[in-house]
Image 1 (cartoon, rainbow, N blue to C red):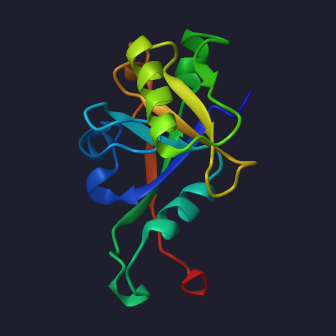
Image 2: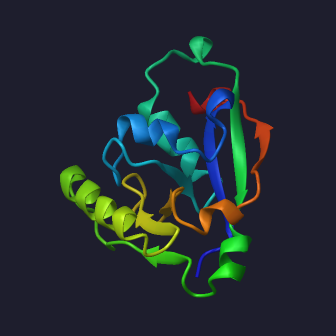
Image 3: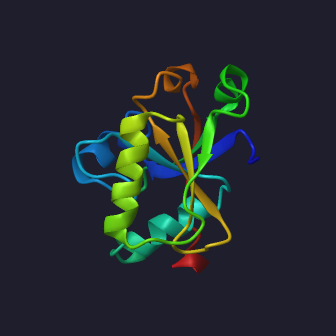
Length: 153
């Protein structure tokens, strides 16, 4: 079982657990219209996820990135053994991933789905179903300013 701590790297205006961005645009594990929040088990993985999508030179990177620490222990306490579901252990194409995730969201089986990272298959991302009844138990995440190290770019 993974740690009850999850991580998210995002810009300050979207540093919340509303799932609004994924609701608007969809993601690998959800179609548009379904709010979820994408998290990672390790603090470094969301950095890779952001870097792969950045299409800006280093001097144009927005300075308002924050690293969020999300405490999922309330879920662990509310539903021991039933707060987390492991998704497929192999990567699916994007269409099949979305269909799989959409079923999981609609059935509200667990508040969190653990899925392999496309970038590092041995690492896991977590998908938080913000409409699941237990999701409201998660406290407001902590956050700190995050600067991209110049050697990364």
